Image 1 (cartoon, rainbow, N blue to C red):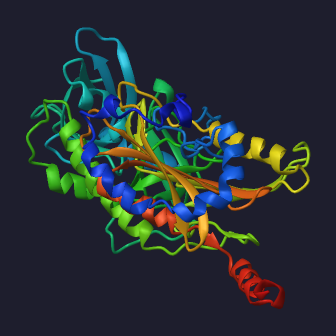
Image 2: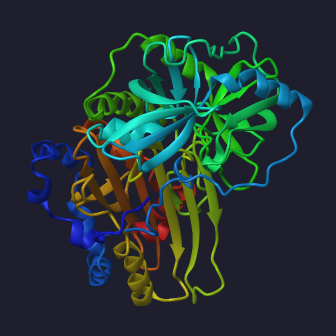
Length: 503
């Protein structure tokens, strides 16, 4: 989610605004990445003057967050489908272990959020989604947790642990409060489901009543950094954290109540991650303080794995005739492209947008832990140099980099000229520090080619929730994706070796 805020020119030089949060002394390392090339400046004075006239700091379009509905705001309710005799049998066999999970204000019974959960031990251990209990986890002084059974029995809950990366949380009811209700077991890992197998999602949609939704297992989602199960049933708000079981009532996944692209498409956290959290933390002491330190620890581990895997991938080809532009491998990112619309009045361009489909939910106002990138390649031969420079720099100037808010600092930016194997670039690198997650930052890298008067490419790369060192790695990796194409290099070499060039 791009926060409305200052444009790149207005954000460029504000060291005092985040001096307390960023170790600014380390920014000299960025200069190592962005070494200026003085010899590039002389032949580009005319072009750069035109670019600066329009303001050269910001890119083709604001970088959006992944097209993902944040877990608490799930898809609209669908009409309930008729359930089979098997679904009725499965529900009757598991209803005693189903719970509604409610987050209430501490001093009154006003409901702040509602979700579902399920018992996994006779000792009152309950699994649900992290996002269902995130308000309590972050502000335990303001909120409390309660459960309700399918018969209406209610009681309090305590938080033992969570896995923010997989959107899971482990709770516990008071000793003996849920005794005798049984516990759901997990389907053995050595008995994987086959595509098409019927599975059954349960929970309390829209705080109306407990329900069972029948659907199919369709394997794991492609191009996902973490494993997610693609489920054909409809998961509605309020079912988050509920179990998804096989025909024998064994847990195969946990509802995350998020639907993408079309209706009747839902995704589940694999049950193995829920089982691991339960086994790891079943004897943990309850968490009573705000969970920011634990969140920070988990997010630092996650971003390190994400960055390591991403920079190990070579860049794919964008297919442009003049420039090599960074396009990621589609292992855990999805890319779209489009060409020139009819109303561009002579400016032709090709656009590519690539992003991770899933973010890590921290709170209603903060999703992090994802990568997003785009580029636009322009041909303004029909416009002429002056008109092209105005539109080209205007696209860069319109970029938004965020602003100072309660979760993150204002951006601190550095810009330099960069020589990438003879291709002159202008690069802007910006960081925003997280206020309550020390050591994590949002990174934005903006790049524009400055080699021609009527042709160019703009690029933007965003990484949410990365360490300073990993921001350096990602910046260097992104810049390495820009170069001349082999054809352009051959044309330059042919020109320099021609008889006319030697006279």
